[in-house]
Image (tube, rainbow, N blue to C red):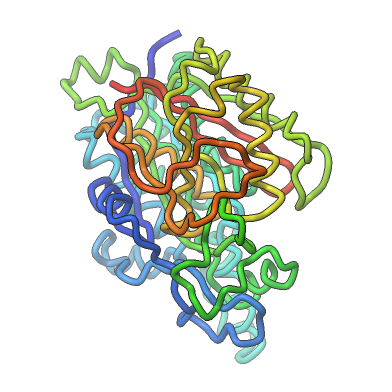
Length: 409
């Protein structure tokens, strides 16, 4: 089994783009949630989101390519290009058939499909974009990244709800470690900000209704949290064999050492209250990494800002980490950028790697009164610390659970 290095990070998020932009947004510790101005959200009980307001597709793609891709694929390709750029992978490194692509997304091109349906209703079939069929399938992001970069290894798209990005990174990690590929471009992308797509979540009342104060709406682990805030975004990691990274003198940002996944088999929207299945995913990741619960020095929690999920996550951490769960620093970074569904696990994996690299553990934006039922050491403010091993958790609809373990470089 080979060691797996992280040599590149690419991101397009509401708090900043690129590895440096994302980290600067984390350090600012300021929420990007706002009133939605992308469409008329007035019919819905939740009218706030974390939008990316400064993303210009033609800054990353030529004009023709940008027109042919929907926002989901645009975000996927842009983040992948940034990650490749930071890793300094050459064309030869990417096109020898030993590079694969793994991208997770809960909804893929569904929002673009919604937009085209509206065009169909108004103007008939001739008003529909000819790219619709190739935009809405779940593997479009992975396929477009592979085409853009000329990568001929496996190209895999998964739709494991809000665990999708973490699952993609975990599967890519195993592929590199086992020798299936030498390099993997792995992460998640999500572009769900369209009326019906956003409204579907608002109507089942899982979204925050703190419309009068958007900046404080996403509040992980806070006693007064009332739901998550929808967001868009993408993040990609470059994973490669440690030996190859050293051979080409790449800057190694961190190391992926463990992955675990499980399913609650309980309910489509509510987590298993005991946290047992989520704990199993974490324990599997720890075993995969060859570390004990007491070795974890930082936890970047899923912490979506929903009542039931955070209670179950706290129990899962207590079951899997044991006594150290009460003292290990924990933060929920979705207070900054909301919940980008399948992209969240990838964004948080990137933040976890950078926290290890920079010796600074993020705080939890908007945490005012810790929910005492969670019984965790949740940080309000960033903490200067140099943990060696960190855990990132992701949980989603359908009871899908994923956990990743990272080691500092």
